[in-house]
Image (tube, rainbow, N blue to C red; front, side):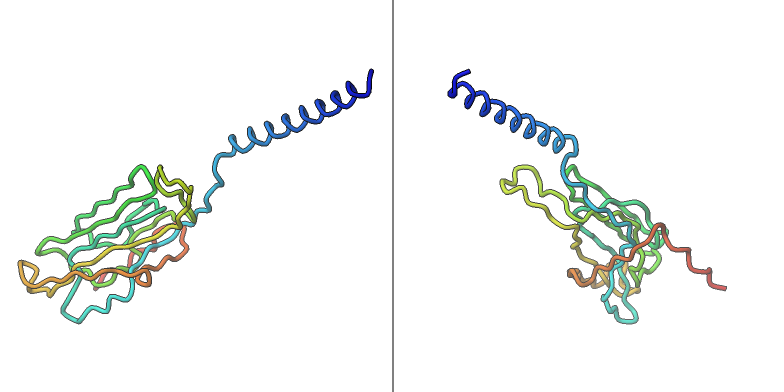
Length: 178
């Protein structure tokens, strides 16, 4: 074998090895899919509303990202509730009370949810960015005697209003009043 043929054969062999290794890595990555998101099971609470004595919550709307609804834990049974998860990681929780519904003053341990650490932004994002789980929303509050049509006002919730506490299930119901 001439020297030129040996050099070409050696380079060709190395090139084939690198191609096979690269192909094997690509196949492994494709089978693994995107990096698995870490999931935390938590109880969702909304704190820091500081309602005056006679006011209570009449409605709420919570926008979510990277959150999967599992169970309603502590919301008055007379409330009308909705939740929806869209095709992307976005969704919402919503609730409202009718005029004679049960007052709702504390939004603690409302929902049991799975929270994903990072979710891809919607399709079409050229940078392929990821977004952590997040919450936003508002509550409507008003005086008990004004529920039929009196003054109500909307309060926008800040990130500092949302609390997540690790949990595997809803907490036990509080004891019934005597």
